Length: 464
Image (tube, rainbow, N blue to C red; front, side):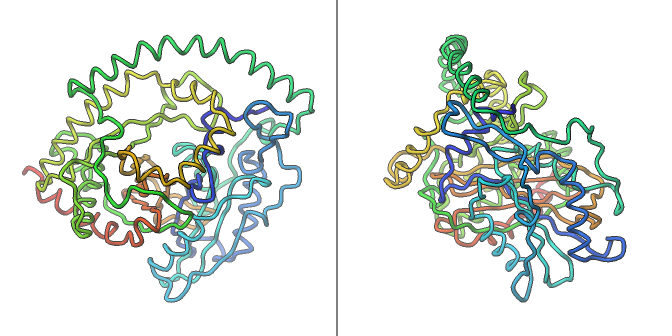
């Protein structure tokens, strides 16, 4: 029996029609590389062959009334690819803006929990004759690293790539558990919870004063609820806005090497510069730095082999208040060093361990009350936005035979933080996906257009 971890399940419990918690990936494709040329029927056959081998695409939730713990994954015995694969056309003239608007509409719709939690949209009618694919998967089933891995299962290093090598015994999910099995395991978990809490509590009690002490001494990450308020920070609905941009990875590395900082420092400096211009254009640039939540993969640090989401997070100050791009780089290098040291004080598995106690009913009622009372607008801002940076392959990929020319991840937004910026490096390019709550930020293209300008600004400021 494969039970969701508490962290995975929390993405189900926190989801509402306004706060949809799936992740999307927009891929632009060159269909001319497909052997024999592009046809939807051929792509459909290729996808069906791979989905038949990859169990993550055929598992669905099972959560009967007698289940007293988190839901379990089971094989969908009635799996039908037609429930997941969709063929649509982008409205004329089929340029980037029409494509982004179509993706925004899809991104705002909840996934049907009666089926495996993913959708695959093939988008035709683009102006340049290419095609696009929007892949949507629930956050309960993947994190950033996991999502990148699943895409590589569907893709290959050549147009006629062989099927992924997955052992026969690993190609299927667990079958439907009996009522006795699921009840017994649920009760066993409930009995263990007091002992698990007793194990975790001393570590938390010891950590809190030490963690807060670093913050008060100015040697740690920003404190939640101290972010400046902007129009990005409020109650959200299910409507979304989308835009995307691309810069050269070589330019990012050039800035990194010249300043002696990390790629992540440069990425945050790039985003900070673009956000500065964006907020200036809206007449609302705050005097203080923005505060971003930055998810961090703990795949290499975790001691847990259970669950799809192996992540933690830290808060980062974004120096949008600084006009000098070089000053922004140096600010981030020092701030990120302190934040990472501060973050490493926390055990890699602490978030996942405490998430095991997440109660579905309490979370669900809490989110709905928080939304209906518009509490995000009544208390100090926790954080302004979410920024993720996921490294990807630097070799060309072929998705079902079509060469991938661009890859733009689109992460979720939450009440109180209506903007998500996700960065993904691929084949010498850095793709930046922007997703926002439409009522808070109707048009993200000014921010997308500011990213290449911010990159040019950083290059001009690079020491000779």
